[in-house]
Length: 330
Ligand code: PMP
Image 1 (cartoon, rainbow, N blue to C red):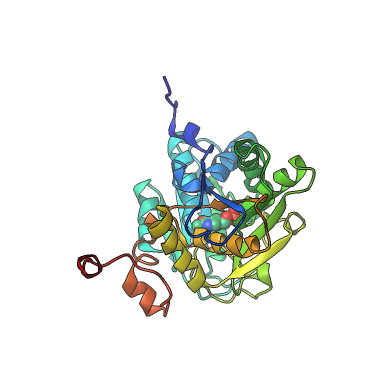
Image 2 (image 1 turned 120 degrees about the vertical axis):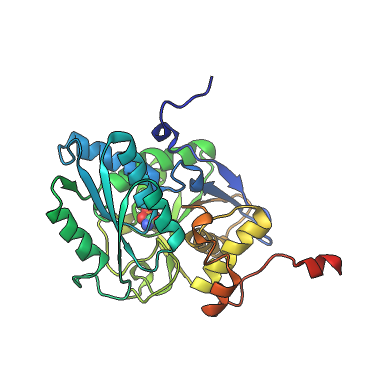
């Protein structure tokens, strides 16, 4: 029999799959790790369970407590799963650029959401950081996981994501590429892969053009879940060899190609990471194996990246579309 005791036991051990079409002209092997196959639909399930375990152990979260966190959605889903299983309430603070589909997922798990403007500075009283700090102070029994600074975020990837990649590639991985949001994924996974390989695996961050990790100031971009306008403690710059900046247009075009050409329906930060990987691969040979982490699935973006009207309204005219019936009849 193969039966999980609870849904939390299904977190991690996500598969690697090889890319075939979007890699045309690339000699290296490009593998993607499908984090949307976690039960909450993203890599953030991994950090949620570890952060809550640690908070319970340290007495920061007591029975019946409330979890308060600013989150672009995926961390919220992970935390909501764990909270539901363990009897906690959740309040999530979201920037208004997060799509309605993603908001509705959180409320479906029973969480409360508070939406804040994207266009204000982090220290503004209405910013999603400020609002979540205030709620965490004012709600009795509140615990703020603080994913941007909580060391258990990167640690979860050090303990699970990194070892899975090393095991599943039989130690043949030579490059690891991930988008950088809090920085937890790249810092934890990257640190493990560097250590286990005798420091031969190269760690490459992917970042939206304008974000701090690739030298910007936090200029607005539309890709969700990645890029920052400040330096989070979950990011360890010493782990990362190189950061590649990718435009929204290129990220979204690749996101569509992954669905149309590889059958992989993922979010915009996944498209962004694949663009960065293919750029890095230009100088690599047939002995190289690049693993790209794809953080979440595409269903949260159907009204945006996969919607022609939305894409046109932002001037993204380079995105491929599927065949029309007229094409097929011709
Ligand atoms: N992509 C998406 C869609 C995300 O939600 C996140 C998490 N913010 C990331 C990428 C980046 O992951 P990390 O926070 O570990 O850097």
